[in-house]
Each structure stands twice: as C-alpha cells, then as structure tokens.
Image (cartoon, rainbow, N blue to C red; front, top):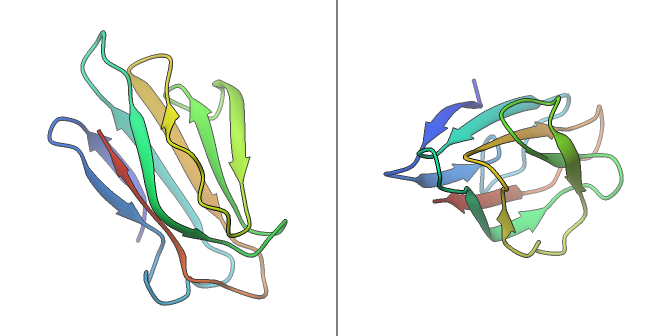
Length: 109
C-alpha cells in the first residue's frame, strides 16, 4: 500500500509507488503530515514527473481534504517548496487508467 500518517520530527522522504520506476494506473495514495503545534510543514521536491493533466499530486493546507486552497500539481516541472499555514498538511496522489510516469519524490520537515 501507499500513503500513511507522517510526523516531523524526524521528517523523511515520500515517493510515488514504485519510484523511481513508473507508478501504476488507477493509484490513490494519501498522506497526512503533522508537525508540532506552532510549527509549519515544509515540502521540498527532489523530482517530479506525472502524466500532464491526468495524474495529480494535490496538496491541501490542513489535515484533510476539507482544507482550503489546494494546489494541484501535474506534469514534469519541479514544484517550488510548499509551506503550510498550520501544523498539518494533507497530500493525495491520483493516477488515471492509462499512461504512467516515474512520479515524484519529496521530503517533509
């Protein structure tokens, strides 16, 4: 499986399924990242390559997909670092039924 509950410290690295090989079709992975109260989550991307406009990494600024102002990332341009406004971030990766790519790697602190 993929996804899970992540905390920092210690922080760590998250990759798409099967990275650095291509991820599969029809994947859904969800990660909840929590840092101590008063701190913020920082995502830093090492690599990023998704099927453009069909496969997405969606970043929610909070602990669930009810959180506001999600960023939907797709394609192969490496995103700039992303910082939460609170101590939680929710991340969802989804791929469709055809065409895959090497995926992504990001670290969280």
